[in-house]
Image 1 (cartoon, rainbow, N blue to C red):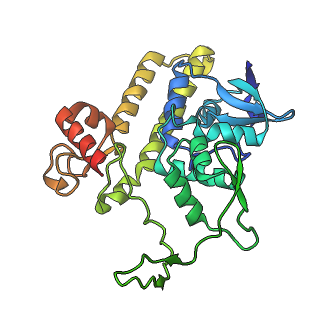
Image 2: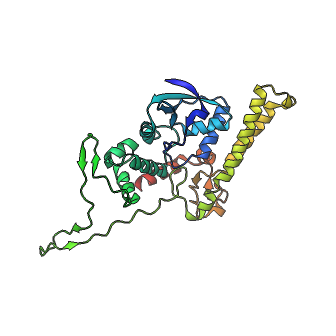
Image 3: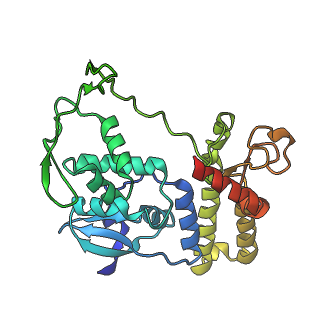
Length: 315
């Protein structure tokens, strides 16, 4: 059932937000699009009899709140928090903002806490990730003494199976003399932290990470401009007499141009010309080692894009 629901009645802190965090740039872009009259699909909420629990559409909800909206179109389904979480765990794999590795790991971690008895493959299917990732997150999470591991897990076929005890030692293969000695195997260390990747999935050189991390500074400017544009559009639509002398067409056009110009300051990709190694002599990135999404789309050759895609595929 689809209907409009007050934003104040939608629960967004029930533990069903499966991304590692909201993407401020996406919220700002959605707010901009909504202010321009764009139509988005309804957000999906689950109703447990008393609460509307958000399952999909958190960025759209925050964008609507930012624009001063009081209601939003919702696809309302029956169910509680567990149902909302099950739906949320895999829904962003097919639409919306592309999931990052951090998003996937965060979703798997939430699934493990909520459904600890499910097998790695069952959880992987629920989260739409590979089952090795589930096994890795399960192993790295660890189990405290106050919360012993479940004695069974439920597989994809719905059958419950007993878990073998965690192996502390592994029998070494029989040596050439047939001695069959037992050798203790050290537990594997957790994998090193993932590299910081740019908007194309390319690793960012260490020396450029501090610059990459200043993206929020640009986003704050864009958000401020979006708010001004939204306020001006509202004044225009409401025929607010305070703004009677304002040339809305000129003001909004200049704000749009300022927004577009400032957005080019947001780094999107490691420069494919200098690879961020010799930026001072590079004309494409103008000395910063990183380029904007606009420059990536308009100035980078198809061959360079294809080379990067092939190189990523080999890694």
